[in-house]
Length: 430
Ligand code: MG
Image 1 (cartoon, helix red, strand yellow):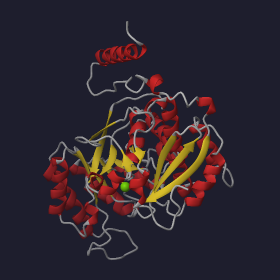
Image 2 (cartoon, rainbow, N blue to C red):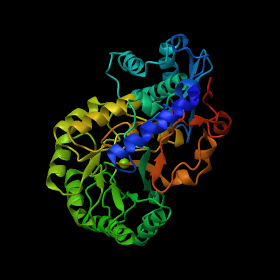
Image 3 (cartoon, protein in one colour):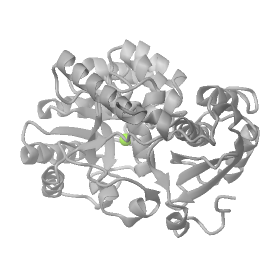
Image 4 (cartoon, helix red, strand yellow):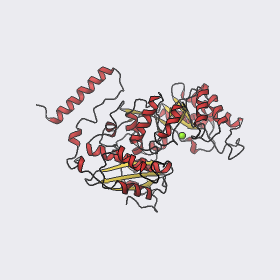
C-alpha cells in the first residue's frame, strides 16, 4: 500500500504526465513539483494562525546600494527580500516600516504591502525610495509565507506557466571607456560562447569625444555613427538568431531617441531600452509608433499605477519593471497582468543578486506574458554574489534559470558571508 508521501509523489507524476500529453509541448511548466510533499514539508511549529512577525532588520551590500531585509518570526521562520538603486541610507525607513508589521501575521503579503503603501504620511503618496524599501519587505513576506506553508512563491502566486526563466546577459562592457566595435563584437561572442542566447549593450557614452556638451544629450552625427557601428558589430558577431537589446539609459532627448530607434531598424533588435527619460509618455508613444524597433521602458517606473497610462497610450512595445524597486512580487505580478491586457511582453530589469534574481523568477514563472529577464555577466564571476547567499548551483544554465521548488523564494542570505560587504557605519541586522 502506498504511504501518504509516495501516493502524493505518484499523483504528482501522474498529473505531470497528463499535462505534458495534453499540451503536447516540451518546455512548458511541469506544474506540481512545488506541491509534491508540500504538507509534509510544512513545519508543525508553524501553525499559520499563530505565526507573528517579531522583527524586521536589514543589511546592505555594494556600498549601500543594495538593501537586504530580514523578517523574523515567533516560530523561527525567517524571510529575505532585496531592494536596489537609491536605497542607501534607508536603515531607519526599514525600521519604521518594520515597526508597523511587528506582531502581525506575515501570511498576508498583499494586505501588508497595501498597509505600508497607504500608511505613510499622506497615504499612498510615496514613490521612489519608499516604494523600493517596501519592495524588499514585501518580498521577504512572500518568502516567510512560502516557508511557513511549505510552498514555493510561484505556487502562492497562482502557479507557473514555465519551469525555466530565460535570461539575457548584460555584458557589462560599460565598464570599459569608449569601447570599439571590435570590443562589442568580442564581448557579444564571449557571452554567446558561455551559452547565452540574448545579450544587452549600452550605447550611452558620456566620454565620447564627439559629444559637444556635457549636459545636452543631443547626439552628434559622429555619436550616432558610433552607436550604429557598435551594435552592427554585435549583430555581425552573433548572427541573426541571437537576441540583442540596446540600452540608452533614458539620457537622450526626443530627437536623438527617435533617430537611434530608426537607425537600429536594420539590426533587428529585441528592443531599444529607454531611448528617452521615463517621464514623458507622449514622447514614448511617438517614438514607439514611428519605428519598427521595439521600444522598451519601465525600470524607473513604480507600482502598477505607474504603468497604466504608458500601457493605455501604447507608449512601449515591451515593459521592463525592476522587481527589486517596483513595489514587490505581488505588485510585479499585477504589473505583468496589466501589461498582458495590452498584449505587451514583460521583461524585468534585474541588477540585484541571486536572491533578487530568484524572487523575480517566481513572478516571471507565474505570468503568461513573460519574455526574458536580465542577468549580469559579473554575477557569474564576482565572489560577492556567491558569498552573500545560500543557493543551488548552477544558478544559470545556457541562458535559463530553473525556478526553485523550495519553500519560499529558495535562496537564503548567508549573514556571515555578507558581513564583509556591509558598510561599517550602518547597524547590521539589528
Ligand atoms: Mg536599463
